[in-house]
Amino acid sequence: MTLLNKKSLVLITLSLFGIGYFFNSYKESENQKFEKDALSFIKESISHRVVTENSFPSKVKFEDKDFEITYTIDWELQKGVEGLLKRFANDYSAVVILDNNNANLLAIAGIDKDSNQINFSLPFTSTHPSASLFKIITTADLLGGDKLEPHTQMNYSGRGTTLYKYQLKNTISRWTRWISFKKAFAFSNNVIFGKAAIQRTSGHSIFKKAFTFGFNRQLMYDFNLGPSRFVMPESQYELAELASGFNKETLISPVHAALLSSIVASGGFFRSPSIISGLESEKDNFSYPQISEKILDDQTVHDLEQMMSLTVTKGTARRISKGKLGKKLSKSYELGAKTGSITGGVPFGKRDWLTLYAKPKDNKDDKGISIAIMNINGKRWYYKSTFLAKRLLELYLKREESPASSTKISSKDKS
Image (cartoon, rainbow, N blue to C red; front, top):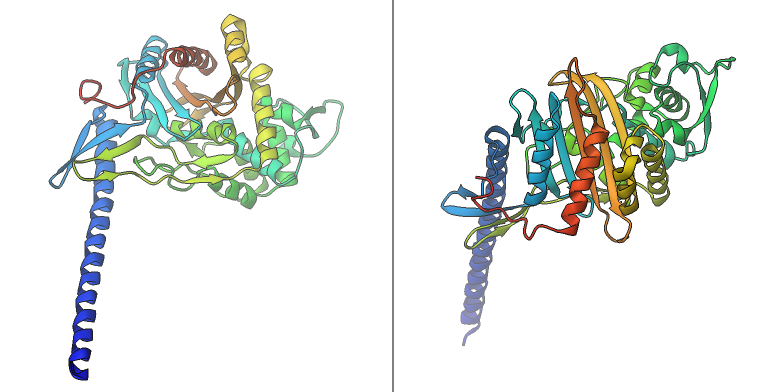
């Protein structure tokens, strides 16, 4: 074979290799585009059906392929939650139950008293002032930066549930009272949190911490959930308002409210919540991405757990641990919570918030669940969030004793 023929053979081989490489790359690119488009379309379709039609579609067709949808929802638990909301209805209520081990949504439901009909839209709306739930983020910022300790003593005057400018002055009088930061958290003392923010941190620092907790960014990747909002304070008084939750500008969804407790219960890990566990067609098997990152150090997690536990035993959520049922729940679970109340938001009304985690005491590897409850009432109060929390925990305890056989949806469950 001549040198020319050898060169020609090499060139032909290289050309064929290049064509094959280009073809495979093009095919891979086409497959990636199809997966991306399919995930986007299915997300939009499911979000629309769940929110506007109150249904969980078992299949979604994209182009010429039928995708079977598997949800993270525990349908036995979901049925129980819906029953409790119908039995103990407020003007509006929303409940979210989240698995702390993986941030999977186990149950979501909303209700309005006028229709007494279950809806799935309210838990996914981000139009609700977070109130004192935001104290979890402020506490994480203050503790994580070694700006104060849980036992640090601080002073205040007047009622702890108010926040006037005169209360933020560091003056001592015969009406001045002293309280530890840990106890201020448990009893949701706005003045202490306002003063701590002004004296020990900054708006920029809290803004950064809020972002790590999921504010001002995409929270879910498999469902259309509007972002929770936290704005940068423009004055010292605004900083005090935002840090204590004493404002109507910081907005959150019930899904995000459940995540706040889940971050603490899971050891300081932020995981984006999920509602879809699988997408499968005849030839394809897709999944949505999930963010998982550790945002709190172990000491901050420990301190927050102690403060949220105190909230349940002696603070604003103490009704959960009282009575025969409360003692039974406390025996089975490590409980931690944060409450909040404020008037405003959409739909308008006085909000009664509770975010709570429950970790089984007999299994340290199981991070348990987190529950968010949001009640909205007008002129009259019906059932408090702590009352509903006890019933939901009782329901979950019974479910653990007799777990559902499957979480996979079929057309007869929801269509």
